[in-house]
Length: 317
Image (cartoon, rainbow, N blue to C red):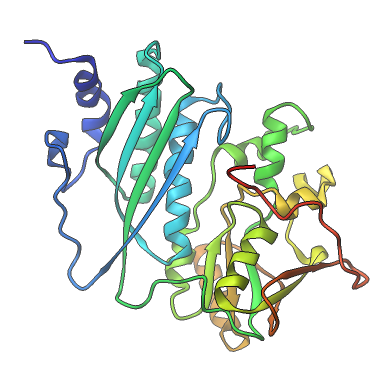
């Protein structure tokens, strides 16, 4: 008896991605034993064509972006990846070549980030391609980085450069120049800062990744920690391509950077720099947390408050 199309695709494209605990994708659930003495960290993200990626983006890059945005959440908590669950909903006429490329993208990043598929589900949909990925990681008990630990006097730090993701969407749409393709590449292929995140346990007092915009995400840390934050727009690190685009407000609020946003006590700055050097990821101090009602103030080079039309990305706006 021949297999239904769904099971043929699972066997052909996804079974080769399955790891320990997946039961070779032959059962309805995975059975996983966490490493001894470790706590589980779980996170999930959804991506929809036309919202989180362009409908004509290459399927291998779509798969890698889906996995990497979840890996970025683990990085922000200082977690080590363990495995992931995947849901794929696509129109019935999706060609087999799409699945082959999608699975190849996952395979490439599984090899790079030492993570495997545990299970999932696939369905058809009359609407756009809709994807969801739940990733599991582990940390030593009590060491997960949280949003709630920032204190007055801590520095506001970011990894890498800010603004490339939001500018990359405009570049991918052909709305701004992108001569070397670096901006569109940053939009389509985030760089989860896993090595740096794992090294920050005991160094950063709070952390999260920049997905919805620097100012908005910094506001999340302020709210959960009960502090205010002041940042200087001129200190926010920009890539050469972002500087050339000259879209400062978009860089501050646009999102899709997947860099780490940190609260670091002054006494830990030397350790932060050492961790950043070991991970080969630059870090930049852009401001300070202070006592006050939770809010973010952005200042110009002359110390004036920089008004912003919006704080960041909204999933429902």
